[in-house]
Image (cartoon, rainbow, N blue to C red; front, side, top):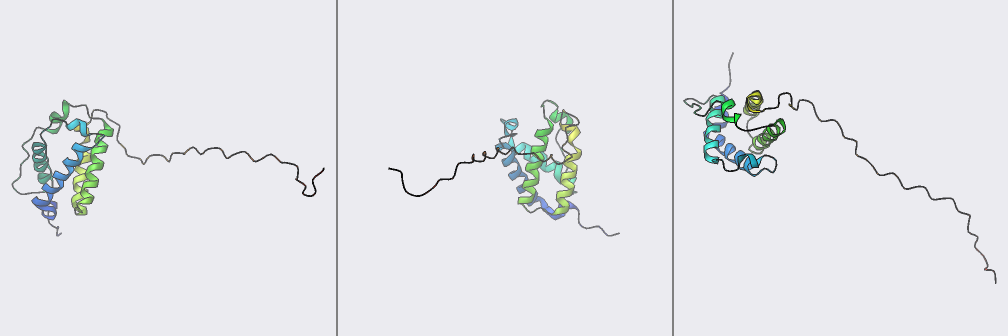
Length: 157
């Protein structure tokens, strides 16, 4: 059975670093989760994320030097919605950089698998599409009341 190149070979170091830099720019600026990154060292986070992702994607000679993820995120209260928002930003960043579909698949599956180590609210996963919301429509205006026909003709004097 012949396998294609490792996902890391499909993206390469330079593109992976560019994707991560853009991703963290978006995360830091995001109105929903950006506050969680206030005061954090962006370059440090990008480097740890590079190590984690490059190793995941099969980069030779790369080791993750950060804390275990459960430990690194334990001091933060991260809810499912916040995890989902970060995931959505990652999906958009990967799409905007035209990352190889196989690399995307591996990366996103791994990210989802890490969820229990990161969030504090078990069972908040968004696995089903949201229900269609019924948008309230205003009531139609009432039909005009019937009126007596107007007779045209001479005016009485």
